[in-house]
Picture 1 (cartoon, rainbow, N blue to C red):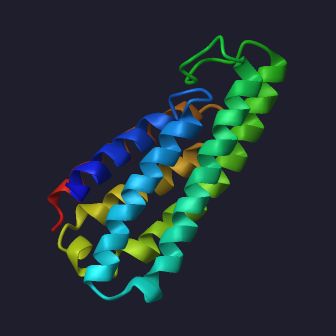
Picture 2: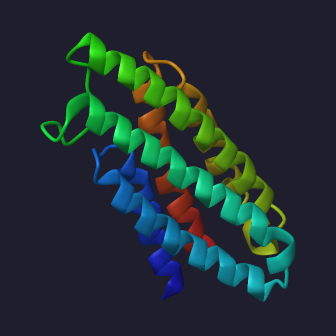
Picture 3: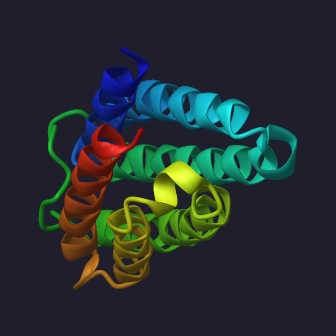
Length: 173
């Protein structure tokens, strides 16, 4: 059952970038569900103390990324725009979006690095090779967030990466 919850968590994380201020809530719930499942695998493989710190750093950075992104989009658009992958309506919105993409991208890249460090040594995840590939895809989408032109592509790529990660979580164990 916990595996299904982690898949739901990954899907919630995947849509968080597409939402306005609601993205903070969906990402927090999603991160909790995914972290709980991965933590249970750490206990099973007796690596919790060794690798748990990387997982918590990864998920903290991921949450900060969504927090910055959600607050930035709310500042740029208010509540009038629910989905945030939109062209900016003013110079002010554009400026906020640029800073939002850059800061959120930094947190997201760091999160992907720590997620790779925490997940790859686990035997159960190394059986499913595409787990690592989906996390690398998260890293690529994080890099795309640095550009106002490519950032919407990074958001869509992040959606694909997290859905792929959800499928991988379902295939593990």
